[in-house]
Image (cartoon, rainbow, N blue to C red; front, side, top):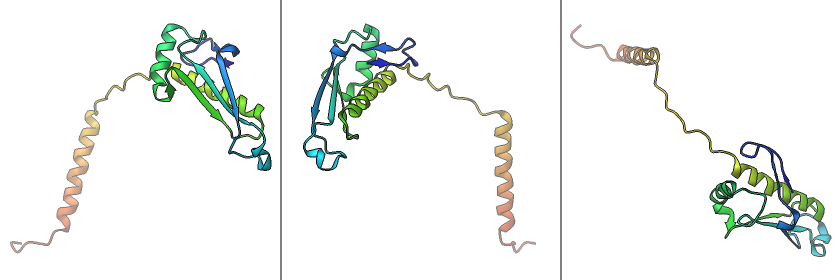
Amino acid sequence: MRVPPGPGVPQGLVVPEAELMEQFSRSSGPGGQGVNTTDSRVQLSLDLATTTALTDRQRERVLERLAGRLVGTVLTVDASEFRSQRRNRSAARERVASLLREALSPPPPPRRPTKRTRGSQRRRLEAKSQRGQVKRGRARPSDDG
């Protein structure tokens, strides 16, 4: 299985087929009467701790980023949206590839807060005082006048 190049994976990745474990079962998805007889649902698993496709640094990042999706160190993806097993197999592989690519991408840089400009502060205060004048103009006239 190939993971195309992207941020964090400039050369891409190649996961050997022998490291992917596939299981097939009956799908609850589309297929009409055939749903009850064909094993079109695909469950694709990859053990991230033992795969040779990742370097040690990449492995640490992936295990940390995908911790919520893992059972131990195994990443499992289901695909059952198509009627054919072949299309579900390719959909599962695409999902694993996109999960790996996202997990390997570097984190975004921290946000650096910016200062308001003097002009924007001045305009804000002028707008506030203008609004106050409008509201004062709506007040009932006093008996002094």
